[in-house]
Amino acid sequence: GGPELFVTEACEYTNSFLSFFPNMEIILNIEADHLDFFKDIEDIRHSFRKFAELLPENGILIINSDIHDYKEICDGLPIKVITVGSDPAKSHYSAADVTFNENACATYTLLEDGKAIDTITLGVPGIHNVYNSLAAIAAAHELGIRGEGIKNGLLRFTGTHRRFEKKGEIGGVTIIDDYAHHPSEIKQSVLSIRELYRDKKITAIFQPHLYTRTRDFYKDFAESLSLLDEVILVDIYPAREQPIPGVTSQLIYDNLRPGIEKSMCKKEEILDVLKNKKIEVLITLGAGDIENYVPAITEKLNTMD
Image 1: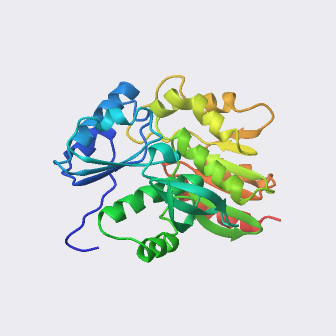
Image 2: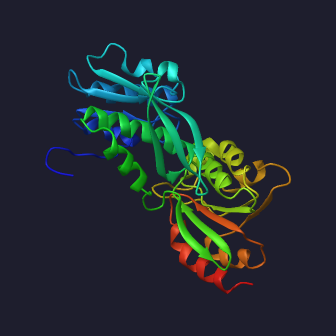
């Protein structure tokens, strides 16, 4: 927005986020991921502590108080710590009276230190974006922005490419594309789509991303995907990895809940698989190249009865 402010999304993978020189940080969550690089969750937490240590004296850390033992990340540092989260008792910023409109976008009462100070309406769906918005509000307050500027900005922000991106209504079918590639992300996407289309059959095409992530989280993937009505699994997108013997989408397939509609295919076979299915709401999930197939899927659905 100008020469005084630079904002970036930082990633912990390969500890690349330790190369920054921040004055303010926002930590939204700390979960097991990128276990092709990190040893375990404690190794990840150690890196996030190092990330917090990058802040200068009187730097600002905004952190989700729902993170397990979040104080371990920041205790003893000469910085200002601001918490956001679901529990008003341990969060400087929290939300109350959360409701959702027909687009699954939330309206809530903004609490600052437990006191109601405003009503916020979001332009993006899902409960997870309530907590994301709390972090954004905290950052804005620290930068001297309050009131209508925040409310209008949050309402006008309607999302980014491949983040629960609605592609349209085609042949009576709603199509959504989402970058979610971690079990927790998928769960949040599924909860959002459930809130939005309560009476519809929801089908997902999921492309697992990385052999190591599939190996480490196949049961968690299956648990999150089992919240859907139907799951179509395609082959793992390898990205930077070589295949691991015995690690395929079959691991997820075999752990889906009993009774769920499920199938497996290669990417090139997606259209043939869809041909004989009743589709009402379709979401494509994954961080690989699954999005490249969305135009063809859209065209196919548009020609189906």
